[in-house]
Image 1: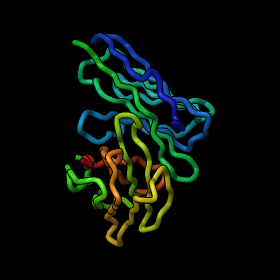
Image 2: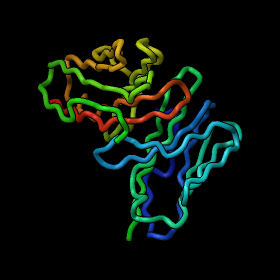
Image 3: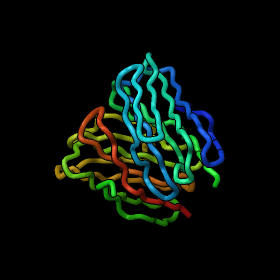
Image 4: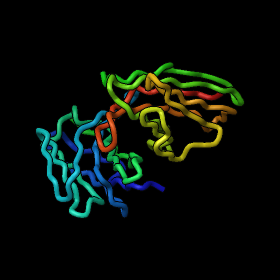
Length: 110
Length: 112
């Protein structure tokens, strides 16, 4: 079982639409990170959130960390085909482990 | 380019064999993480080293072992290989705890 549950598992949308990916856990994390992975490549860090309730924006991407530091969301506005990829959340626990969710595969159609 | 180097990129070997995967972290990074990624299991944390010492352990089999050397490069040893060990193995590095991890491009292991 995954320590971090991501939903949905798959998401296919039209270019220009908005989407939200969720990352939930029953555990508290000292920090939470979001990565994007393309086929055959390693995950690439998008953002790290540390404070409960924190919101970070990266161009069209908005990341939110839950108040209790157990969950997070990633919202993409006006998706582009270049946003296609596997989105992974990862939480660092107090014992230094960085655990990943199973990921959400996002496909943006032209 | 993340600055993390993994070798080899691809490895094909037979069941029962032993292989060693190598990782060179980004310059200045003290932590090295190893992950296994397969289609049905996602990205699974195996083990973490910090400045030469084991810091955290995940779902690492007893047939697998790792170490981090004084120059901070790390090796993951996989022995008595089984078909189910076929996967992508990623190494990541970070400066310390709670800091961003940067991933290498992975080693694709195929056990036949």
